View 1 (cartoon, one colour):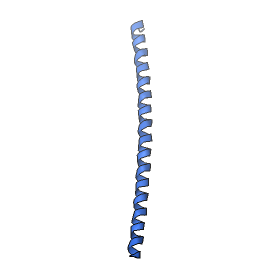
View 2 (cartoon, rainbow, N blue to C red):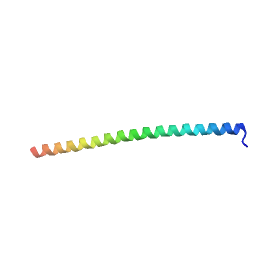
View 3 (cartoon, rainbow, N blue to C red):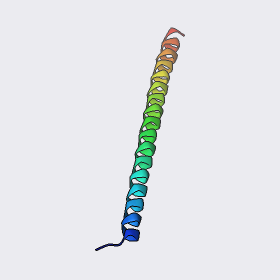
View 4 (cartoon, one colour):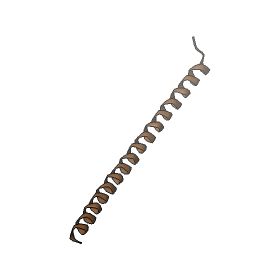
Length: 63
């Protein structure tokens, strides 16, 4: 039968693991949000670049 000290240590370690898991979940969520923002910015940049290329092509045809 485990003594009180072992029981308390197991409880404390369990709480630490739960807290660490919650922190990791928050960090993972934050990373996902930041990756989404970066992808949106890259897509917008690619669209702007494509529009600029179309404008350059249009001006080249006019000239």
